[in-house]
Picture 1 (cartoon, rainbow, N blue to C red):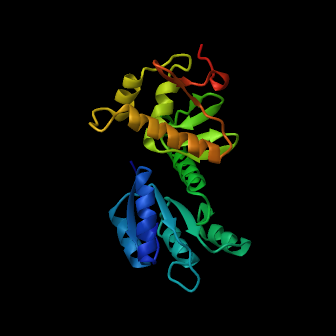
Picture 2 (picture 1 turned 120 degrees about the horizontal axis):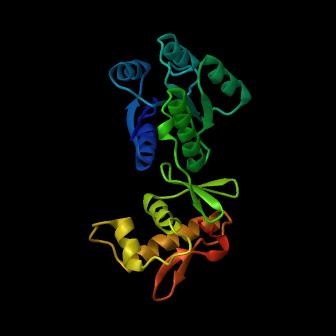
Length: 236
């Protein structure tokens, strides 16, 4: 699990952001002041520092410069409501690695955060941690970030939705029996049932429709589920 320090002086909003990031497999610490952030950075290792840039605040560009001057090489991403080229340029000039507006859809935010994490691993020479993307029909699935790249649009999935597509994509031509799919996705969870699977697939299809993507999963009556043949890439 990747660790992230979220620096934001608005406590309620910061905690809400932290909960959202935790849902996507980040371990998140929150610092509401520059002093608290410096202390946490000295005590812990973080894979990313996410900073809410503010005007007339100790959490301005000066804070980013302080981190860089202290020798902090961790990727710093500014996540802010302050829209405009002047703010973005100031943040990047201070030493930030990226500038993301808070109005950006969470799927795109996550894609950019994971991109920084991958580049960081490559910079460190850990080539073995590159994320293995999975073909799902004509699209690609990133199982670590739970993002389906479809028509150049990243679609954020849940863990269960990701796992369903992983199982079906393992052999696109095969119809996976309902019970096998339940066992592989829900494991020993006593709540698993065909109706739970149907609900998960219904929500997946609704999410795909929101992004103008056709259904990817075919219900083969009485047998199970498979990727829809017209969009499946046959494996050699």
